[in-house]
Length: 72
Image (cartoon, rainbow, N blue to C red):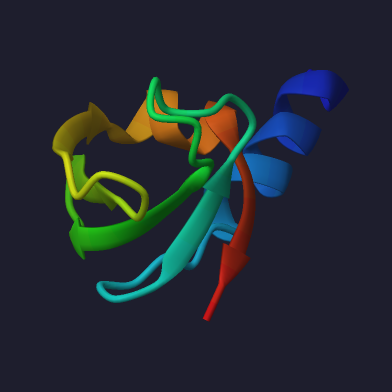
């Protein structure tokens, strides 16, 4: 029970990602860039690679796991 609550607090409420934010991912895009710009927020995120301008739809759960940092 304690472990589940910590995980919810750590990942659930602390992720304030807005449209226009630049995020850094743990793994790079095939072009080599780790930076993405957020285009749409909701159940899914629409992000655009800053290296090659490729747009990708990513589920919220997957993005929150693979995010390294948010640059405003």
